[in-house]
Image (cartoon, rainbow, N blue to C red; front, side, top):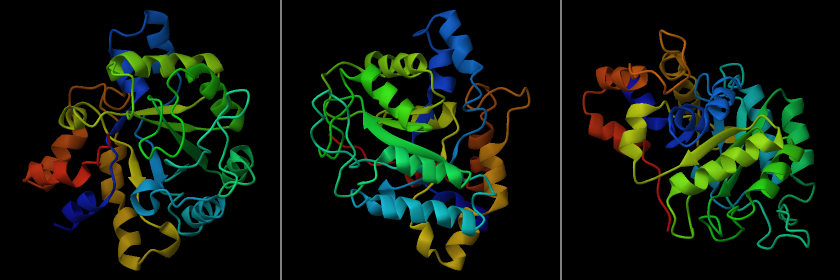
Length: 282
C-alpha cells in the first residue's frame, strides 16, 4: 500500500520520448531512425523536476536556481533526478526583430543560457518548454509552429538538454504531422536534447507503450520529510528505471515492465491512470 501511494503521488507526465516513439514509427527513414536509437537518449526514462504542477506561470530564474540547489542538497540528484525543467510562461509574448524566442526580462533577466550554465555547474541538466502551435497553452508566449529550425538552434545554443513540446493553438493538422518537424529540426541543430511530446487524447495508449518520465511536481525547496521519502523511494525508482531484459530503450519492448509492476502493486489500474493523467488545454 505504501508503494502504491508513492506511485500515485509522483508526477508522471504523459509525454514520451522521440527515441521510443518516432524511431519505431513510419515517419522517418532508416538513417533517421538509427540516429535516434543510437543517440544515447531515453535508454531509461528521464528523472527530474518540472515547474508547472506547483508553480504554473509563477516561474523565475531565482526559483530555478534554488530548485537545482535543492535537488543536490536533498540527495535527490544522486538518486537520478537530474533534469530541472522550466515549463510554460518563460518567454516574452513577442519574438525579437530576428524572430528569436526571448526570455522574459522580468523573470529571467540573466537569460536562459546563463541559467543553463548554472544548472550544469551543479551536475544537473536543464529543460525548457515549447509548443507545436502558434502559442503555448498559457497563451503567454509564442509556440514554435513555423519556427521549428530557428527555435531548435536557439535551444541548442543555450545548452538545453530537454524539450517538453505541447499541442495547443495549432493550425488544425494532426500532431503526427507537426511533431516530426521539430524532431528533424533538433537533429539538424546538432545538440543532444531529449524530446518529450505531449498528446492528451491518447494517454491510455502511451501508458501501455512507453515508460513516462519521472518528474517531481512539488516545491523541492520546502518538502516535508514524508514527501522526500516518497519521491526518494528507491523501489519506485527501480520500477521506472528498469531496463527491458533485451536491453532495449524504454518503451520499445513488448514486456511493458512498468505497467505490469504497477498492476501488481495497485490492482485498481483505473486509479493509477487517473493518478498520472495530466490536464489538457485548448
